[in-house]
Length: 462
Image 1 (cartoon, rainbow, N blue to C red):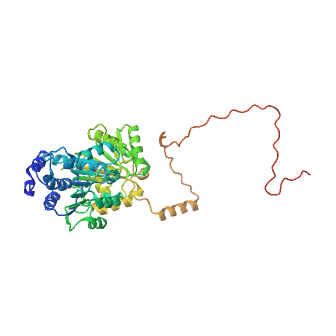
Image 2: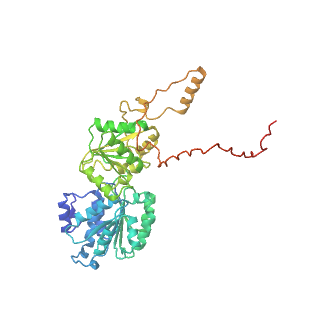
């Protein structure tokens, strides 16, 4: 069995790894660490929770260890390694790993991302940082304001490249690459190695070694998948029902939009289920507070958009709920990758309405797994145990024709009126100006003169 000592790591790094409680390297670490130590460019295909962060962090620290210095002079601490991540949460997680594994090597690290003031970041950069973890937009902000110099970067790491592609960051990545004039080694890691990712890798990797340790889009073996057929309008009611009836705690719920995220969190709280929201429109302080409250158990439900699908590191998360299925099957894999980690079992629940059946089929095709359907009594389509698919259009048309010929008129059962939502269902009401007081008449009113009609004028009285 391979150990971390077999990979050629320094004693300081082995000590830090042991203090983190790790004894055996993962497959991605076994393959990637020796290659990075040898100075090779690497293109790694690795899913979440496979240990890829340590796979590039440990050898990166070792390759820069000869630059380590306890000097307080900023000139002795230029940026020598740059790690780009697509989200703030992932940047924080990666930099936390850098600090943990490099605690016995005097190399400085720091993280910069948007949503927070730039001044503290500028002060940290002025004091000197060897390993910088950043999101593309904020990094370019600092470059534009001349608070960051990347001319001495030796090692460049592009983490979660597929997510960078999805979020439209590739033009920014190319601008940043043009600034790395002293780059000696480049690493790319992605959950999927699609043709677009390979094309991107070819543009800046030099004779890379491809490392792929997991089947494409395989899901964790310890995750139990289940799909509940339900009409769209009953999804929230069903979510509250299964949370309360099954006593679910620490549930990560994914929705499609930021507005829907806020709305669902508000409605869950109104139903007596303590929830908070995390999405791109919230400030970094608000997002961090929501995540901390969720981890500490202060709130049971964390409602999130796909911005949280990667980079959230939550120990022993038991449940992930897809309130709305993602548009991409790959995002399903990243969502449920938050559970079933570190040998713990997890459950991935999907609430699927009729319009989402094609998305569910694509997900099953991609992960090569049939997800069992389970209709919750009282919440199935049309209130029955009916299948997920609606009847074919031809049958519905034939039924309508028969009703018309026989004179029979169907009566649809009355649906109970939904409770009014004072925040989201009420239209915008601008401030009303006070009504003008009527002016008292001073005498007989004069008759206003008539204006001739557009065509023909007025008819004369006979």
